[in-house]
Amino acid sequence: MAENPYESDKLVSEYLLFHYGSADEILPPDAPAGMAEALDFAVRTPAHATTGGRALDLGCAVGRSAYEMSRTCDEVTGIDFSHAFVRAAAALAQGPLPYSRLDEAHRSTPLEAKLPQGVHAERVHFEQGDAMNLRPDLGAFDLVHAANLLCRLPEPERLLRRLPELVVSGGELILATPCTWLGEFTPPENWPEGPTLDWLQGHLGGEFELLSSTDEPFLIRETARKFQWTSSQLSHWRRR
Image 1 (cartoon, helix red, strand yellow):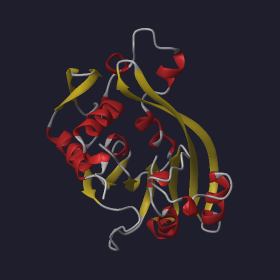
Image 2: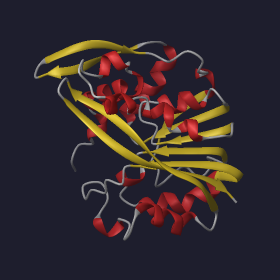
Image 3: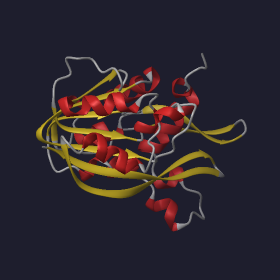
């Protein structure tokens, strides 16, 4: 079996920069406006929620969205398939976390990731888990957030079938996906046959009301001269 790239130090560092890096640490000096507008994705997506209470962040990566949700939620659980991501997310509650930003070839810059002011780390818990096989005793949440997760699952419909029991009546669901369906993550027979949002409506429409849909860009810096700019389709739902 191929090694999971999300367990590598390289990906952990990229995601720490993606989640916690400042504009000066991420952007080149001559960055066009569109790059700056794509920063803080992990802050912008949970900000679409209008509810607090008990929250779940599925595919939490290194934790920024889960920590942001702690500003308004009493309890937040972050779950990710990557052990390395979960360790990094949890470690940030203890203080700044050193990592290296790759610049070019063997050249790198030492940086530190740290939690922003105003979050409540004591309200946040992280655990390793599989979004398609979540433990049965998770319970129900007032808010479920899953960003850039669906099109990385081998069988995404298994998560969609579980969602109604994860969200309380009147609770909110935020899904964001760049719809980059790739065979190495999801077998083509498990891809949506039509537009992803129509597919979601077909699976969720009976139990959830679609409140809004919008695009949220994001930027991942790989090196000083290589960046991933992507647009994620965000849909905001309320449990009937």
